[in-house]
Length: 292
Image (cartoon, rainbow, N blue to C red; front, side, top):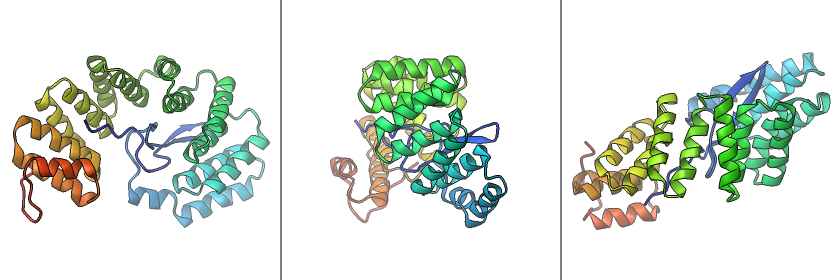
């Protein structure tokens, strides 16, 4: 079975959570999730992290050198752009100015997580939660660290708390579903993913994850429908196209299966699950296949 791409895609700082002028940004990296569900698009990334925008934020910092929110805002944009040393410097400065600035700790934690420093990330999330026990997004961030470290019960506790504090937190439902899915509790997982979809209808990841659970329950038609929806939202995901191919293969529709596997291989020719699936359904290189 093709594992779901977790909310977390390869792109950093997928979404911002504004709070008193501060932004909490989140990643969608393997094993992680974002506050918003969708990866930031190239055009949006260029706009957010454009030299003009950064210059404007730098001007705000120059005019307000003792305002931690100004550093936090610029650090968040640096984070979106993958400029992690500069992001860390700004979050460090914000915390130096205001040692009780919860958003800056949470943002710094996200950078540390992206830099593969989970212990430092965990310490910062703990500090953010200590400073603001009602900070739903910080519980999600800490839960992601716990889940990546193989501590599902601790992660589940944090996702439960995040939902208690913010019942419309799609990311928390999605990640809670991933825990149930990993435990083989697919019906519970499907309920969680369905809730996440209702809260973030434009996100590909919960459709992909729910489709994966439908596959596990041998409900291939529902799985294929979910992967169809996921490819509409993220047509560049090799994992989603491969999963779609698997669903149609199991339905006996070799045409759509071959087309899906071929689409995955067009994105990444070295993707072994897509290669194997294409061979299984008798796909021929250079041939054309219908996706619809």
